[in-house]
Amino acid sequence: MDNLSEALEKLKLASTDSATDSVESCLDCLLKALANNNTEASMKIQEMGVLPLLPTLLSPQSSCTPKVANIIAEVAKNEFMRSPCVEAGLIPPLIQLLNSTDQEVLLQTGRALGNICYDSHSLQAQLINMGVIPTLVKLLGIHSHNTALTEMCLIAFGNLAELESSKEQFASTNIAEELVRLFQKQTEHEKKEMIFEVLAPLAENDVIKLQLVEAGLVECLLEVVAQTVDGEREEDIAQLKTASDLMVLLLLGDESMQKLFEGGKGSVFQRVLSWVPSHNHQLQLAGALAIANFARNDGNCIHMVDTGIVQKLLELLDRHVEEGNVTVQHAALSALRNLAIPVVNKSKMLSAGVADVVLKFLQSEMPPVQFKLLGTLRMLIDTQAEAADQLGTNGKLVERLVEWCEAKDHAGVMGESNRLLSALIRHSKSKEVVRTVIQGGGVKHLVTMATSEHMIMQNEALVALGLIAGLDLVAAEKDFVGASLVSVLHKLLSDERSAPEIKYNSMILICAVMGSEPLHKEVQSLAFIDVVSKLRAHENKTVSHQASLTEQRLTAQS
Image 1 (cartoon, rainbow, N blue to C red):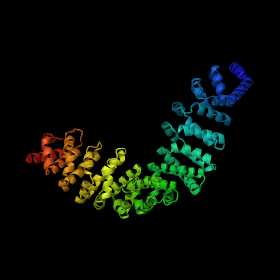
Image 2: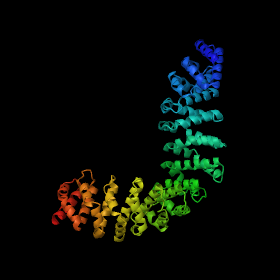
Image 3: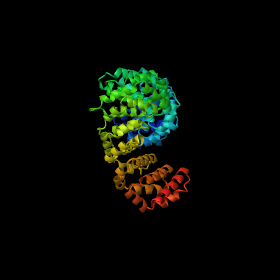
Image 4: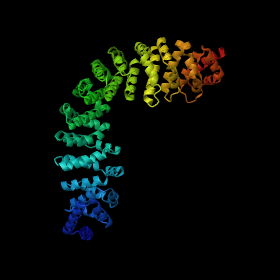
């Protein structure tokens, strides 16, 4: 350590008269001390005030520069040295050095910047603002044959890509082409992994997704999948997962997805479809998720249903009923739900037996699967009276829905159960369905749903309750009283924030329950007439007209 103190003193003197030889030997001594005991040597460097001398030694022309940058990189491995490095003004001269043509200078400079900014989003953001991204992308292109430099760039990209502010800058460079070109040259698993770690955060950006697709990343990914699908080594399994996950991520962008769909004739689309019947769970999952992503517009959905994809998904689900893989179940149900959105697909999918296969998962205890199962059935029965009738009279289904309507821990499942319960009534308009729901104990949940914070759910509940009252008021009377339906309607009509549709459907419902004596009494005791007469002046014509009709009804029956 005494040698170190001596070297530091010498360096302070030498740096002023820039005698290169003596500076070189001092730097060698520092590097030796850092290799010996980095923490101790770093503290000494800090104490002796040497850091502020280093910017002047970082000149592009000096032969000392790689050593100085190396010292900074070593020192900045210690967290306590990072702020002093910034305060000593080391970042601007280091950034300048990224324009050097000397590969050793570039390598040590990259290390130094990487270590100083390690784990600091604010310093990384500063580097981005100072324009390091285009510079590093250019370096990657020029020095792609230099393994150490390439790795340095990849580590830097991996860190910077996590910042949202970097994505725009990356998108304005040719990073996609450079990374794909680099990927194509790699044979080692570790190197491919490093590139994957940069690609994943970059591919979250839609502009970059499209650039990666155009640069040919998809073909690389398909090749990785083909090479690793039967592999049993851990690295094969890891690469298969990374490649197929990345493939699915690329399909999340509308433009990149449509480009790969190519009207349903795209070779990529066809290859991904072949993953669904695969024996490999990871590929089944990726295949089902890919279909769900392709199924994001009506044209694609209609084409896919017409070309028999539904059958593939049903076979996949059938393989996962007993002791199935939950993520695969969830993905396949997501795909079916999306495919069921266009009206023309619903009857075709019902004829293909989708509802029957989906019902096999009714016993699932996994909320994500329950959520998608409910969504799929709700999409299927929309405007399909016969299917709604069939499902709505299925006592087991209604019983399970009522149970899930109480799933307080899972708001999504609870909401979807309520919506499906309401949809069964609204689309079937059947007295049998209404009876099944009343017997199953579903009425009180629909009354609660009418107070939801989501207007669409309030409305669906009110329309279903109106149908219950119209089709079988006698059977529902007790539940309506027990769930305080009348006072809920009073609140909805009195609340100025209620949307016009809510007010309109609440008044329709009031008129519908007047035929029940106990409910009629409740209506009278709550002075509904005052609330309704105010609504005659409502700006919405449908509401004001219904208010007049409702007022007449209330007056006639008071």
